[in-house]
Length: 433
Ligand SMILES: *Cc1c(COP(=O)(O)O)cnc(C)c1O
Image (cartoon, rainbow, N blue to C red):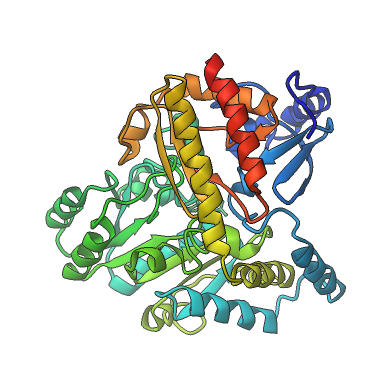
């Protein structure tokens, strides 16, 4: 590992300076700009396994994993080989392909709620479509979401959204008409009473409840025992749908996602990230009766030029095959537990209030005593301390998500040694905070 204590990032700085003149904020997606932690973002040159390299030649242990997809490690040789083969057959069909059947069958077999699936090109698209479907199926307009949960950047979902919206401190976004969000009701995460109240105040008007069953976009926040079960009961009582946004947690928290892990089956599910194996894919699916409303089987319109793209399907299929191997999720859980417990231990020994946790290969750390059960709690954490921690880790070759309001990710390529190195770096940095 290259020592990056006096991190030289001249090329990164040059490229990013040029990028800022070419693209808003110099990036193609806001969180990448490091605004919440300050300092300059690192410009990547290549990625492999658990590591990323920047344009100045620095190597980092990566805990972002392209924001989730890289669960098998970056550029896994089997995924790359499968892509090489698929590439020879062309890059886009715009017609049915057998690859879609294969990935659809894998998704349906894995995810308890999904009997039929539609592929799209991003998580945002999947979430937009699923909202339309909830409304089409129930004939109701209102939806409930939770503050701090991010479901992509569609207008009606940019209400108390986490992720980059949290990072930039935008409660909402200009350009979203009031009328569009008027039907979006919000409740605090882990608060069943608030959800009940919303249903009581809007009788017969709520199409359904959508949530991240484990939150990753307000930092890592797991559901309290009984929360998901409670939502299942309340939605059923009111003839409303329950939608799990498993764009982040699908094939990550468990092969079958949070619904497998917690044993609560929603009506509809959105997927993305992992199922694209690093290429742009999203999907939504659920009960056959509901999915049959989607065009051309039914009247709810939704389409996409590149949907079901053969390269994206190929990367997804190979990634899921790799995840099916015995011991995958046990391994992710083991190394991530070691990381998470280690970070908390280091924080304790160096005198910093901190809390956090992990499930499988997803983790989080907040600089607050906690507990963090919702977005309000998360916001109590010390962001300035996190920024300094982030910078210190970067200088020691550890690449963490550049915001406290983002979950971290490990991969099958991370070794115990990588974790040990990370914890040693954390000890140095926290001792000096
Ligand atoms: C990332 C994410 C999205 C949006 O997916 P994109 O592919 O970035 O559009 C939606 N929901 C959740 C839970 C996510 O983590």
